[in-house]
Amino acid sequence: MMSEKEAGQSGGSPQVGGATVSDIQELIRRKEEIEAQIKANYEVLESGLQVDDEIVEFGSVNTQNFQSLQNIGSVVQHSEGKPLTVTVIRRGEKHQLRLVPTRWAGKGLLGCNIIPLQR
Image 1 (tube, rainbow, N blue to C red):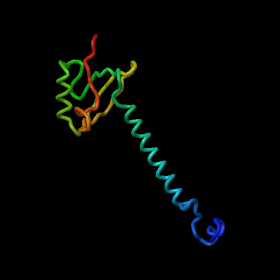
Image 2 (cartoon, helix red, strand yellow):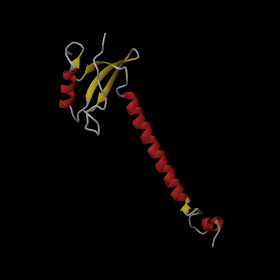
Image 3 (cartoon, helix red, strand yellow):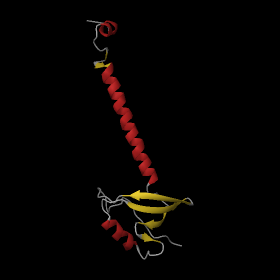
């Protein structure tokens, strides 16, 4: 049986508990990739619709032509799989978002409820 030092000198990969150093390095690389993916997904969620966002434009529906939530429902139904521009006022600042209505496990295509603003 060789020691780690001898294995390293003879060209073999040193082993730690049955895994080689290169196995561990590969696992660390994969972990970092997954963490980067999680961070990117979190940033997408953070930049999407949030509670208390005031929608001022949803695709072709805006404050001038809005009559009821059915207007937004119609835009969503006709935009499945296609990006929609949505403008919101969030904490006093205007933000432009891109949403892609998509089928998911829950109800509807947006994954959220939109309610009329009571003034």
